[in-house]
Length: 205
Image (cartoon, rainbow, N blue to C red; front, top):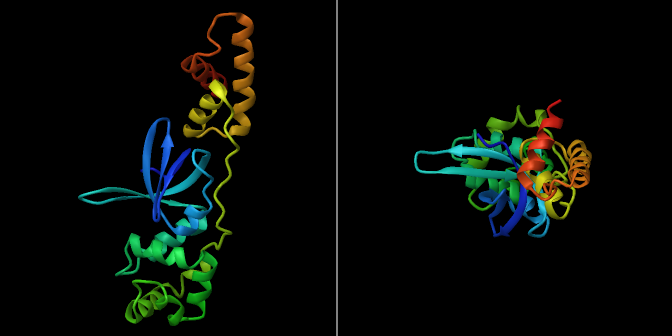
């Protein structure tokens, strides 16, 4: 299962975007709240992902933060609330707003969301009343990723980020390897595969 994507933000549409990870474009469905805080394409960003596998599709849903992802998971446990409707709710209401709406048993606040009728609103309030207070209500900010460096270094850092290495720990290692290869005069300082391999060797120590 895919749990997170780090890559270049591609096209952004009304309810989805493309995240380019090493040349592979992942179609990610998201709330308007998450889409609105993504950086301008083609900048690098990181989104949390919930993978939904159906008989006829393999779908990815992206979130600005853990709070929105956790609320998506909780909302979709309610009968009648599918992934699309959960995103519609999270587009209209922040995690904090959803929590407050449920805590206040504000049925009218839920029915203002397109697709949520009175009966479904009552079901959401009833089923989630005891669970809502246990979930985080984050600020809804995309997890930050520093701007990519230019050239080989930036490509290597992006590749390492995709493998789970933090930029803060990887960048000094990559910079040191690039200098070493350049000083060795081996003509490999621009070879992406060589730099990635050497970086992985050092990071694994």
